[in-house]
Length: 358
Image (tube, rainbow, N blue to C red; front, side):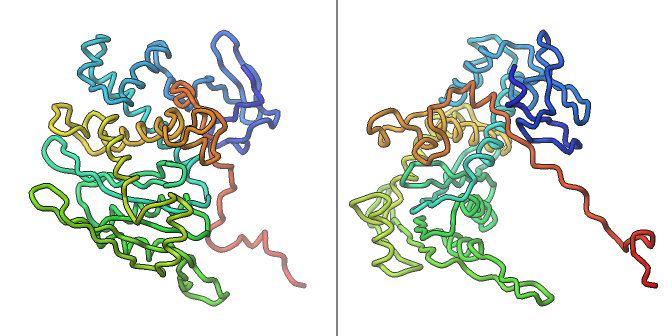
């Protein structure tokens, strides 16, 4: 137990989310508990992880979650380990929420993306169809996030592009998508910043410079691609070609990288497999499974196209980490809380605080 690497999880503590501040001590070695000397709160060493308040050994939970993240259906795990289906579903949900927290803390940081590709997956669930939108950084094969919705419409695409914006620095960016018209409006409206002039009223929004948009439109006949049209919607052909060559090398404008990621998700997430009997009942289940598979893909799975000297994961290629994580390390990662800030004063100031002018 190392108190210097632990932070206080109490949301009302002014020292929450801060490590190596001298406020954390060991409360009980036997029970694996720490104490915060700032708020005098004790907490478990597993607080904030998937294993918090679980009676099942951590090794068993890691094995089950690893199987879930590699496409094993819940019914097969129930038959093999003898657990209740609700128990496995709870571990699925815990791992999905943990994966989303790790993704938002580590991946959603500004970086030079170069080229981003986005696409949607049509997913069957019990009683209907849902859509899963994904985005990928081409250079490092880093999964930038995804969203799930029952409608393939503008709000779904806007939420996806907002995740991409949180990952993007103000650098030249090429976004390649399919022919869905919602991408154009979502990209143009999301990549904007307010221009503060010091005057009253809502500030004017200014679009980012050097955000280029290209589309790949495919025409099908009898479930086969018979024609492919490549469009440049924003930017000049020379600038688009420069960014494309810088990120992927030779070739043409395409969405091959995100389509390959779609195949990975269909292979590793059981409800996404075509013509299967492991359909999800709720949209939230797909959302949690998407973040579980996505974070395991980013941090725990070496990518074959990134192998040069050593096995490299997309997170290593993006500079987020310097080693390949294990699934247990992912499930045990403590996501720090935001720093405590005093509440804002509302209403008129008190007369006792306003100095009187003699």
